[in-house]
Amino acid sequence: MTVTRKLMAATAITAISATAALAEPGLIIDLGGKFDKSFNESAYTGAQRWVEETGGEYMETELASEAQREQTMRRMAERGANPVVVLGFANASTLEQVAPDYPDTNFTIVDMVVDQPNVQSIVFSEHEGSYLVGLMAAMASESNTVSFVGGMDVPLIRKFACGYAQGAKSVGDDVEVIANMTGTTPAAWNDPVKGAELTRSQISQGSDVVYAAAGGTGVGVLQAAADEEIMAIGVDANQNYMFPGTMLTSMVKRVDNAVYDAFQSAEEGTFETGIQVLGLESEGVAVAMDEFNEDMVTEEMMAAVDEARAAIISGELEVHDYTSDDSCPAITF
Image 1 (cartoon, rainbow, N blue to C red):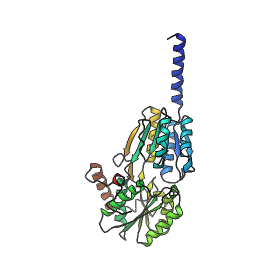
Image 2 (cartoon, one colour):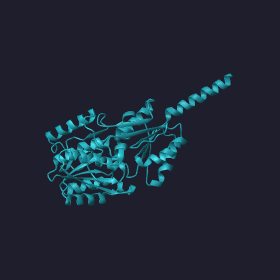
Image 3 (cartoon, rainbow, N blue to C red):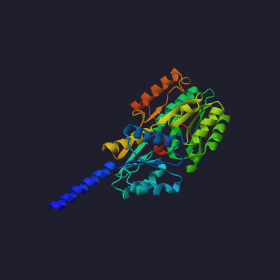
């Protein structure tokens, strides 16, 4: 190699290194908006925490319609974002098509598995966390009837409902669990009016504790529960603060940590593709306790939660995962 070619090669390597060093992560906020007080907002919170702690910057785009998924994902990759973080199972089929076209870009998908060499898939043991809040719901209930409002009727949301029902029925086989889904299209994630209607219907059937896993729709569920003075359970983010006095707890799903870790590992050069499962042991899912619900949760309740949590982690207690066989032993959909 001549001196000139060596210099050209060295310059190219330096340019590539500089480009890699300057690459910013990207975050695509899913339908429902980044201030849905639930899944999306938790992701946004994680990104903001990364900015505050590192002084870094990231690119952000917010989806307004289903039709934007592919175009937005490609545009983010072409702008040089690395990794590109996408939220929710609905992005899986699009990412399957897009990721191979950008082999030098890493992607992270939260809530679904995409088997591509440049994709990091982060999933959670939602059924296990839901089991714990179901147990709490049944122990707190005076009517022996608890309920669940899901967003879009998909296997992932049935996974929440199934875990919840198993936890509730662990308190007693006579505990009744009512479950309703908001709809079968993505609009079901952002319909608080329908969420409130479903909750009132469940209350008329005897429910005095309701668990919402419905994105922005869940705000309507929690509001209706507060208006009717029954207890409610939030999801994804800690929603206890929203209606103090009626919020029994929240099933926290650390989407914020997933986003933060994707950004941080990329910056440190330790980003790994493949599947990561975040469960009870890693506190990827957990029961939220704070000043807003401490007066509502009894010592007996927390002792039962701690015992069940330990049993699940050790393998002594197995919570059935609806998505493993599309069935649930504790409830019929």
